[in-house]
Structures are given as structure tokens and as C-alpha cells.
Image 1: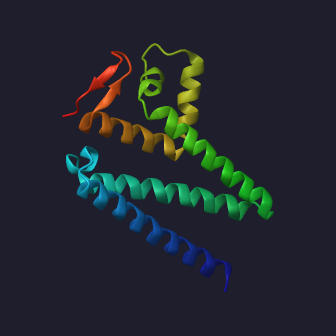
Image 2: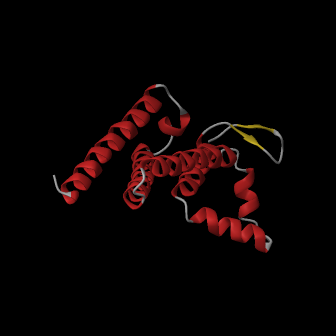
Length: 150
């Protein structure tokens, strides 16, 4: 098998995996009546989940293709996974988003926003937070209470 055949097979297999995972998330979210899926636009949610999965998969593929040593490549991928989990946790409440997008933000905050904009999970977290805050009950960090979504 040539390198091209290997990478095409790997990308197609990963794409099918992402499609199946995104479909399962959307269908079961709709069946179990999670407001994000039952009151949202399910095709948009599917598109966002699929796009985020493909971008992260391509990032991982590029890292493993660029790093020739398996241990170092796996360490880098675990680092990205840990970073993604931490970023998702930080952004799930929405308070950090508000701080990053203040109009009078300091230079350090603007640099942090620029850094986060280069990572696909940041955009996924932003979209997920915006949709869930609109569609479902969520904690309003400024008022310190639950607010019912529309």
C-alpha cells in the first residue's frame, strides 16, 4: 500500500466514524428530548459536530504524519486531547466567552482570544455554548441563577 492509499483510506474511515458518531448524538439527543436538539436546528447541529470532528481528526493526522517517533506523536495527541477537554470545560459556562469578547479587553486578553481562534475546539465550544444558552436552561453567571431557554 502506498502512502497516498493509506492516507485516503485513513481519512475515509475517520470520516465515516465521525458521521456515525454525529448521527448518534443528534438522533438520541432528539429522541431523549434534549432541548438543544429537539428545539434547535438538527441539521445545523449535525453540521457543526461533523465539521469539528473532521477538523480535529485532520489535525491529529497531520501531527502523526509530521512526527516520526510514535511515542512523541502519541504524547502530542494526548496533550491536544487534554487541552480540548480543558477548553471545553472552561467555555461551557459562557463567562469566559463574555470576558474574551469585551470591547474594552486588554492586550493580553486579545492575544488569548487570537490564540484560541486558531484552535477548532474553541469555535465548537462557542457555537455549542451559544446554542445551549438559547435553547436550554442554563446558569446565568452574572445573575447567579438558572434561566429558562426559549
